[in-house]
Image (cartoon, rainbow, N blue to C red; front, side, top):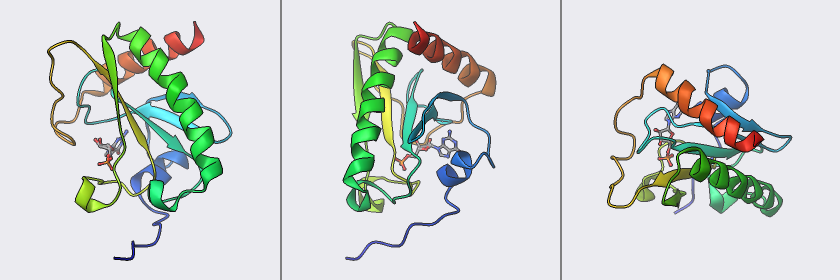
Length: 143
Ligand code: 5GP
C-alpha cells in the first residue's frame, strides 16, 4: 500500500519550527533531540532529523547518517545521565507498527535490570520532571 505524503503540520514539524515547546537536550544543523512527553521510562528521549520524512522508508540516506551519529551521542549521554544498565532504541514505521507521529524519529530509552517499559504513548509526564531529566542529559552531553 502506498504511504501518505509528509504532513508539514505534524507535531514534530511544529516542535522543530519552535511553534510548540519541547525540552531540548541537543541541536545541530541537521538533528534535534528532546524529551518524550509521555515517557516509557525516565530519560526517554527522541532524536529527530530536521529534514522532513514520514519515517525511515522515505528518508534520504544522508539524513540517516546524521541522525544515527546523534542517536549514538545521545544514547551514550542518556545511559550516563541515568546510570542505566542498558539502552533500548525504537523506531516505528506506519500505523501498523505503532507509529503515531509522522516525522522520522528514534526513541532512546535507558533500561534498568528487571524494570519493564511503560506503555507507548501512555501518561503525560510533569513538565518539571521533563526539565530536570533534560538537564541531566545536557550535563552528560557536555561532560
Ligand atoms: P511514535 O509512536 O510515532 O514512534 O512516537 C511518537 C512519540 O512522540 C510518542 O512516544 C509520544 O509520547 C511522543 N509525543 C507525542 N506528542 C508529543 C509532543 O507534543 N511532544 C513531545 N515531546 N513528544 C510527543
